[in-house]
Amino acid sequence: MLNVGKIEEGFVLDHIEAGKSLSIYHHLQLDKLDCTVAIIKNAKSNKMGKKDILKVECDIDTLNLDVLAFIDHNITVNVIKDGDIVDKKELILPKEIRNIIRCRNPRCITSIEQELPHIFVLTDEQKEIYRCKYCEEKYDE
Amino acid sequence: MRHLMNPLDFTVEELDSLFDLATDIEHNMEKYAYACQGKKLATCFYEPSTRTRLSFESAMLNLGGSVIGFSDAGSSSASKGESVSDTIRVISCFADICAMRHPKEGAPMVAASKSSIPVINAGDGGHQHPTQTLTDLLTIRSLSGKLENFTIGLCGDLKFGRTVHSLINALVRYPNIRFIFISPEELKVPDYIIEMLKEKDIPFEEVIRLEDSMPHLDLLYMTRVQRERFFNEEDYIRLKDFYILNKEKMNLAKEHMLVLHPLPRVNEISVDVDEDPRAAYFKQVQYGVYVRMALILTLLEIQVDEEE
Image (cartoon, rainbow over all chains, first blue to last red; front, side, top):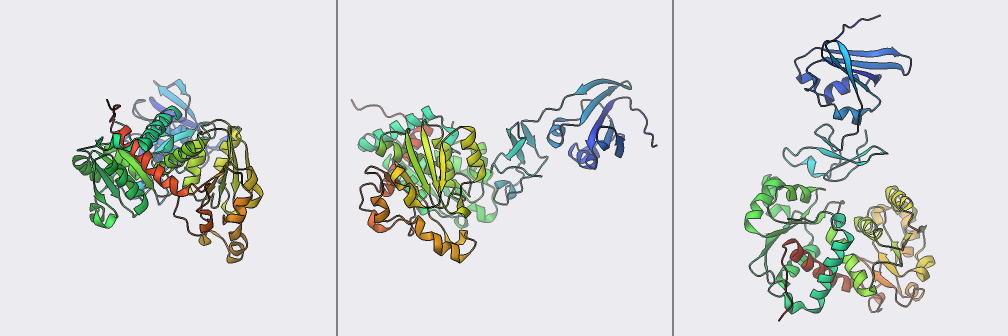
């Protein structure tokens, strides 16, 4: 059994679908932070069989977690302060996602315009559909 | 300041005002002859579209304004690699309003976000062509007297035709409209439109042969079925005549059914239909000028008072 120590302040992202932790690591731009990050892959889970966990030791205001809901809203976000869980954040689909995913439509203006941000807008909350703000192409993984 | 990117940018009430203005323009052209004196329209066409460009230019000239612009990307700074954002900032210093056509989808929206003058989307790739939809709506309203309580047949390429998709999206906002989609299996209306119609509980039918639905239609919107859209030549030859409107098929139609077409027509409407009083596709071009005049006045916030 692998043991990863407790963190004093930061986040524990639990119930990540197995194999998705690295993509979340990049989406949250954790590579750009100078802090301790533990990536736990394929941990045993009663609920999911296998799951990934991310532990991030950082100031709790430094991370924008909106994007997590877009990736997988089943992730549990535990907020840690002084070594204890002080909050469990509910993930709500962001209305707009900026520069996280890219429009793949070759006819979209984002394919040629210099430094144009890639913006996706939530157009159907129930079906979780995001469309490019410019060409309205649906985002498919 | 407002722009026009999508036909749905205007509410039904705003469209009513726009069409009222267009109708007044139609009947009192001289009243508007100097409305835009001293104003300039820039037609920024990154790909050629002579008909749309001339319609915009004609609209501005009818209003007493002037026109500047380019008609393909090769004669603009785009060929030097200039971004749309930079181009519109420059054009904003030269003109009072801009009509932009661009092969990339969303380009006019990028322009609008950086512009200090109103921008009209004059067609962006396969995405939107709002002034065509406004033209279609004004033609229907002017010639049939209403934008409600009718059965419209849309015929031809319903899969790739953006004018058809825009028109459907615009018409579902009006009461009691029934759609009949007439197309080969390969060119049926996309699923997302069918889903939208089901969600809104709007009646529609999908049929293959134009003849079968002719007697039920109040309006027929024709589009071209292109050979290259078919998977094989055999199907194209088998089906193409289904989608050619001729005198015989017109004999099956109601006495006051209107025939619309976004043009250019290739061979999907036989020339012998042109003289039929129900053929509205050339009148439609004229309504396109009126609606663009009304749009320019509306976006420039120019009011023309009644003559004293």
